Length: 503
Ligand code: SAH
Ligand code: SF4
Ligand code: F3S
Image 1 (cartoon, helix red, strand yellow):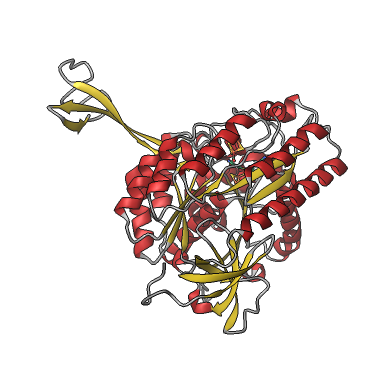
Image 2 (image 1 turned 135 degrees about the vertical axis):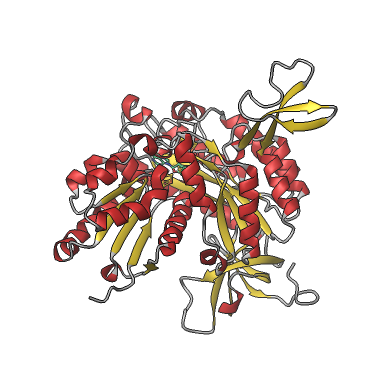
């Protein structure tokens, strides 16, 4: 029998972390000889990298798994895997409902995917074994899991990303915030910060491979903080201490000045900016509105290639609601941060997230969210209807008491106000020529034509649509803006001021 190249189909749901995880998993599988395919029907391995943040994200995956039961009956040799946050949140319950699932792999175990697939194909493991794995590994708090996951990040293939010019780099795993409505701390575990040397190396390798824009990822990205451990200052020279409490000097040596070296988020940004001058755009998401120091804003202001853009989800404009969400800041503190950002970082654009219909949210709470959109001038807001998630503090304590119709109407009204604000923000760019990183063909364009509608982003993350050759994808080009609509700017490629360089 002629063995054929094994094909893997992977569909991704959820946030940027999942997009990056999927890229890493596919890279690892390609390293084992797999080929990617966009056709589920021809795949030997079908994977879903899943999200649990809202019920509808999970329903989409149930739907996909339902579709597969037929395929699985006809081709029992096809391996079906559920990766990511749903695998972690639902565990064995998912297997009961969907016996067609062979693999369940949480975010803390993704480095094991190739081995688990191989074991499943050899018939050496049932789903139970893959699921049980090492339960401790499923909590990404363990150092062992941290090291293995770190290897997965470090071994990433540089090929996949260069076509689009843009890449994600993880700086922090997990989240320590425990907002009352949110599953993420349970699915991704506690915060672990990656070593700055690893992050800088990864950025450098991506840029060497042709990437022009890097987005640093963390659930609360501004909380990045790497503790290098104790170091000892001897005659002004900082020496790392060897091993915990061991080595030539110990903490007990009172004649030496024992200090700790920390890399804060602002230090990391400054370091990447300085050490990788070829990197044209550096971004980061998502910022948490607490503990956002001026040091970060100052580095943004001082560093030409750090994009003046913040994704700073507020969730609600009402203090009462924010308290019940356990967000840890007040509306006035949030507004003070927005004012500080606007004062220190010229032209900064800010995007936000809102949850409408949180338990107990009344019309006056909601009106305060409407007011906040107007007051802060967000360039856009992602608005979500509250979705009660099992095992979250809110699900245990607070009744999901805002009727679906009211949630829908608030969602609609908030987006309508945001649309006016977005249009006003866009208008400020009329008749200006701005550098745009071309991301791809606009869904509304015709992919067959050579000159087609392209879509790209400004430094401030505004979407720009314009005509041009698909060769421009992955490059930064100057675009003259002549129309400002609610969702995007429209323009035309402008001749560069001088030479072939891009501004
Ligand atoms: N770490 C980021 C957001 C992660 S989840 C932060 O804290 O800002 C992305 C967005 O999903 C959140 O900002 C929130 O608006 C929304 N979200 C999270 N849990 C939700 C839930 N249970 N129901 C509705 N929306 C939710
Ligand atoms: Fe969820 Fe809050 Fe953490 Fe964001 S900060 S991931 S909303 S718990
Ligand atoms: Fe969803 Fe998990 Fe991201 S729950 S939002 S994929 S961290």
